[in-house]
Length: 229
Ligand SMILES: Nc1ncnc2c1ncn2[C@@H]1O[C@H](COP(=O)(O)OP(=O)(O)OP(=O)(O)O)[C@@H](O)[C@H]1O
Image (cartoon, rainbow, N blue to C red; front, side, top):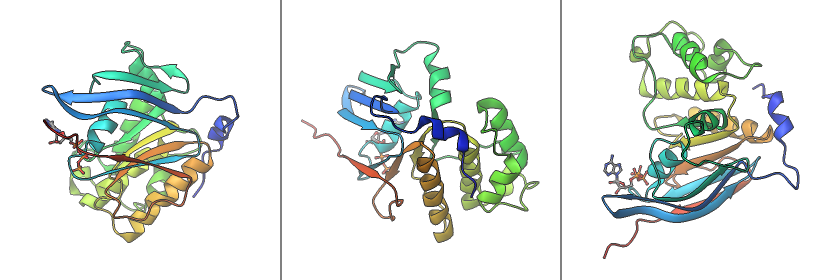
């Protein structure tokens, strides 16, 4: 697996801000707290495993960090820059973060390769990688011309992983990345995370704790459903 050499310039130095700093972050629905206040940092070269039972708020946290939901309070800093709810936050987020959600964000009637080319056009890509190479890395060589809607759930997940592999963003937000994958796919995710962190990236990974964690520098955030009155 080739690794992204251009990321090594972001290797940690003592003065450098964490890739992600979260302070007092909280989110509610209909005045019912879902999570928070949460405080944590994620540094270059680190994985934060976000654990918790069903409904604990793991997906909601990642969606808030990705800018898909608005928090009720707290600060999010990317590389020391605060996200302040401004229009340019979206651009900062898309440079800094790659989000892998539960649902594959694929165009059903485009081929696998066309999907990657389309997403690279939207979000950019690492100059050292190509869509064809990313398909090979994720075990999809030979499926370039298959329509996305004809792929199995695991193949769709692998195509989303290929997109992640192409992303130039240093911070990966991975929501249940192991779901729908066979054992080899689970090892692929862990190898990808290992290579990404080795080159100065970082990741948040939600998990129920049922899978082996990637063999990397790991911190843990355990989320619990808030007690109701
Ligand atoms: N779109 C929504 N509308 C209303 N409530 C929601 C919505 N999405 C999630 N919730 C609620 O928010 C809470 C947190 O859900 P979330 O999906 O973040 O949990 P999770 O920890 O990711 O769970 P799981 O392990 O089952 O994936 C749950 O009580 C859930 O019912």
